[in-house]
Amino acid sequence: MRAIHALHGFIGSGKTTLARRLETQLGALRFTPDEWMTTLYGADPPADEYPILLDRVRSLMHAQWTRAVTLGVPVILDEGLWTRVSRDELRAQAAALGVPLTLHVLPFDPATARERIAARNEEAGAHFVAPTTFELFLPRFEPLTPDEEPLQHVIRS
Ligand SMILES: Nc1ncnc2c1ncn2[C@@H]1O[C@H](COP(=O)(O)OP(=O)(O)OP(=O)(O)O)[C@@H](O)[C@H]1O
Ligand SMILES: [Mg+2]
Image (cartoon, rainbow, N blue to C red; front, side, top):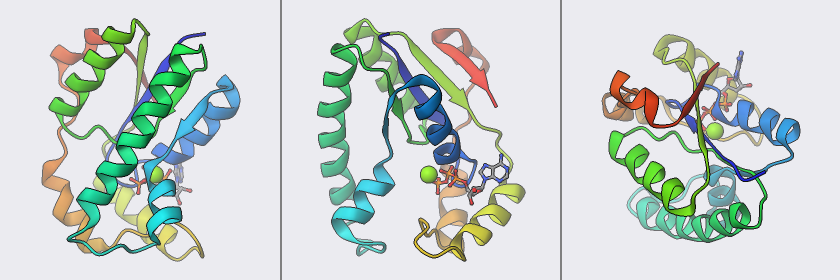
């Protein structure tokens, strides 16, 4: 069935954990940019190059997921959609493709997320996020606003 499932949550909110579960439940194709970044550019690419490298990955992923949904394969977009602008952009893309969008909203709970990231950072091979990165990005997170609720199907977990 044609479907776009997107995740909305801050660092460490449990997006990739949920995305892996949905991937099996829904028989969907999962797109997790962090995995592509790590495979292509290593666990810790230079900070000044990071945005351009991520843009490349996102551009490749975009071509693949739009083709997949067009072919009828459900997709899971494992990005945080931190900003209203990024959500507006995805909603516009889904509308242009004529594919229903479901937004899976993770709880916004920085204290819990900090603890989980600290624990995950200890795991060998796990995606690493420095505490300073977490704090730097925290003020940039824009939670879903009430007026956005009716603009797609929303599932809270
Ligand atoms: N519901 C949960 N209960 C307890 N621990 C969880 C839960 N969901 C995720 N975790 C753990 O918290 C850590 C962060 O989860 P996860 O990697 O899924 O977050 P994320 O949102 O993808 O993070 P990032 O933004 O860095 O990609 C992991 O170690 C994961 O095992
Ligand atoms: Mg993740």
